[in-house]
Image (cartoon, rainbow, N blue to C red; front, side, top):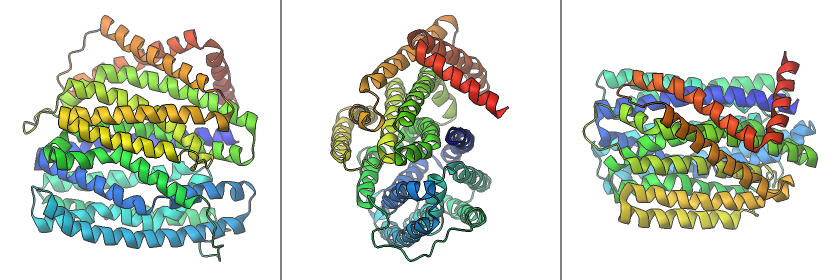
Amino acid sequence: MRSKRSFANITLSLTSQLVVILVGFIVPRFIILHYGSPVNGLVLSLQQVMTYFMLVESGILGASVFALYKPLAEKDYTRVSEILSHSSRSFNRAGTYFVGLLAIASVVYPMVVKTPITFLETSILIFAIGANGATSLYGIGKYKALLTSDQHIGIVDSLNAMVTILYTLIIIVLAQLGVPVFLVYTAASLAYSLRFILLRQYCKRKYPQIGFRSETEKHAIPNQRDVFLQQILGLIVFNFATILITFQLGLTAVSIYSIYNLVAMAILLLMGSVNNGISAGMGDAIARNQKDVIAAAYKEFIFISMLILSWVGACLTVLYRPFIKVYVKGVSDAAYLDNTLVILFTVFILISAMRNQGGMMMTVAGQYKCIRLGSIIEVILAVGLSIAGGFVWGLSGVVAGRVIATFYRWIDFGLKTKAITGVPSRFLWKRALIMVIGALTASGLFSFLFQTNIQSLKDFFIQAILVVPFNFFVAAAVFVALDYRLSRRFLKRALHMIRSKG
């Protein structure tokens, strides 16, 4: 049952995230074409500021999900209601802090950053972009915690995809009509209210036995402060670069960086769907102390994740630069094509995906104190190296700093997961090496056999139709050759699941 739920979650989440990613690629291009690279840089910079403001949410969601695993497994709905009641009050307080921070930013940000629009327009844009965070805190946080811990994260992802489509359509239509950018985002922000309404109705119908206003214990949610710290440190690592570039290199540089980062975040989002799909099942097994189940599930998870990463790495090597070239075609106010950034971002994507696998294992086990020191070291490395790299090497230096810090953290997580899974770290190192070999073999063989001459979006999709399956089969062949036993075991299990569904 757990495996089927995990598979369903992964399938639904991947489908939803693909929709979000596809429409997400559309918005920056429309903003660049209709308003220019500086405005696009401004919007993306403000979105990162909002991400930092959402730190007031950090700790509540993660700790609530972890706290709900055991009572949901035991069907202790009184305890579930107590935890959700505590979560609801915490989310409401966080929402109040968030709105206060928005008010401060609406005054301070236009004063310290040179923006391409007026002071008042920038202030309104800040509130419009912040609407997503406000609705998340005041409305959907508690529902998301419940659905995630009960292995129904796919529902949340599906609603997000639907709202994102509506949000994107509003932006596209209004941008083509020439509406000022601050009014475009103000109108688009109304789409987020729909997500709250639908999620609330779904949870009330599915969980009539669970309430959100029960009398709760003073310490209903353990580890909240530790989760809060981890979220702060994680957000600094992944979002500090945009803020740094805003002040160090300017809004045009933010726009350039964001286009490369758009691909990176899209892939990491998809890989995150795989992580989220199995996290609740893994958390349930850990709560029940099923050691054999944990070890077997971890091995399968690492195997399939590394195979996917090998495939992704091979595709990026062939398609990343052509995609950037096609995406910014017709844009002349900034130099977007940079081979060094292509290489650095490809490496960053692969290492970050592996880092996040280890992070997921540690967090579902509630091992926040165990990973605290490593998180602090990662932040120090990311911030220090990115600042130094920005001065010495510009955008490439900032990304190089992120690569080094992320690589350290992957090693750190890899050494610590043995205590949870019982699987030696060398199992992870070997599959990572096979992943690299598979990616290099597939991309190298493709480049040797075929020519790449992409000049338009049509050319890109035609090439992708050839690249994607070719690289998958070559990468899979490398895994079968170098990891035959696990490949055979995984194939048997996959066939069994398919037959049982049929």
